[in-house]
Image (cartoon, rainbow, N blue to C red; front, side, top):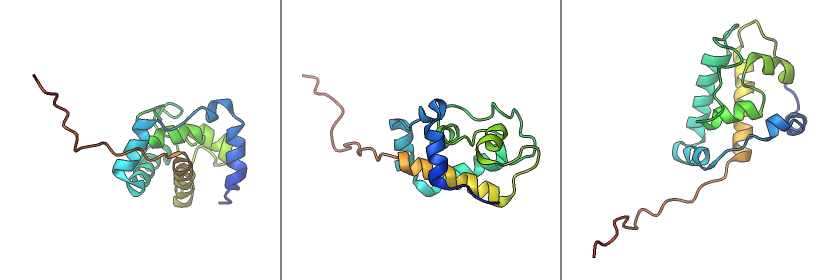
Length: 135
């Protein structure tokens, strides 16, 4: 598989008002901080393998939630959310199972976007006593 130039892909995605509106929120950034990049990349691999890799994914076009995990948001931002978007934006044809190289490419696109968007969250002050004095 010939991989598209990542910079050209990023510019193309940025010109799409729909794709450009996706951003990681505080909750997703905190999830990345809590679990780490390797675990999030593992989640991405699992989602790709289970939801995108089959030749005809269950509920294709509706299988990726719009929120709830940094990978889901990244999938919509990078047009890797369904087989139709993979075909249109990345040139990966629908109707046949994704091979390992294609799955790795999708994971790399997702993680590149996530790492560019990630803003580490300040650590919570666990030394502060949340209990107010009663009197």
